[in-house]
Image (cartoon, rainbow, N blue to C red; front, side, top):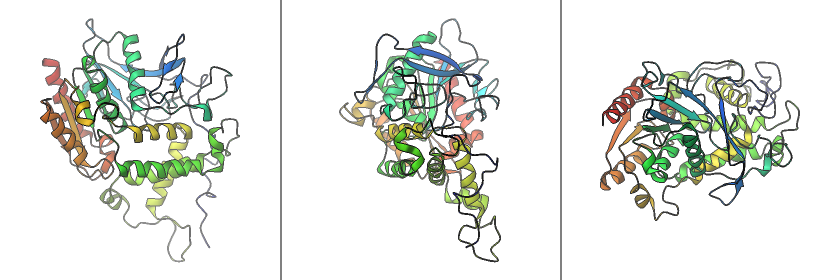
Length: 399
């Protein structure tokens, strides 16, 4: 059989991957700032676990005004981080994931607003997560890291808000997992937000989303290099990078749409089809390989598992008498944005959110991004997303 098996194909760099690409103390700081909380008491988690102390990594853009009334919190998605805007550099291998949205003269105009993005609890880019040193022995948490929820992430952000002297955010904005945090802010801290911008998200994870999440987690857990979550001591090329890469390949397919992939790749091939080889690739396969390797060079497998599970656990109505009762706590205008080709966060979920809020008398505006790019549209279609957000924020600022 001709063609290299995908697990035997050499990396473009020619060097094996580290078992984890989590940011570690001693790595270049880049634009990160750090705040440490709960040094004298535990940070209690929704699932009955606890952490402490916890460190939150964050970045800021613009200046906080004297009344602290111009602050906007941006919440990142599953594999995002605090680097929402800015370029590539030492300690920061990727450009800001919302760079088109944040900056002078951009929709979140840093000439007017103070924009903050923090890395969530359980992640791997400076905030306490599975790769962080355990306070008891200084070794990475690994398998000892507890399950966290979206609510835990938001409570950590609330601590950061206090630390920054922000009693209420002008707006909280984010897409996908970031949108889950946005909605929880409106329910958990209704008096600490003036508006919400929820993009391509849902009030509760659907069975389809949970099913896809399980497949991705199993891809990691079945990699022998995962070692039940304790792999940080392993050498380069020995960790769970193949499992993480496979999880990313799987996710990349439902982050996009059939039309997006067909338009970009069609049936173009990498290796010629004059003789059929089992592992000869079409261009779309090379694209998936690229995204798998790209993630493995900047992320951590355990963090992927922890955050992915937090998304599955997301349910605004849990312990609150149902979704409607939970959303009844929202007291501020909501910008609810869907993507018409999103097969993972179906637009009906955003429509249902709109209907519920309208029935409760909450001011809500539903906007639709028209895109062939599926769920990833909130990271691509800035020519549509930007004006939607800018109009809404401007209106809130005048109210």
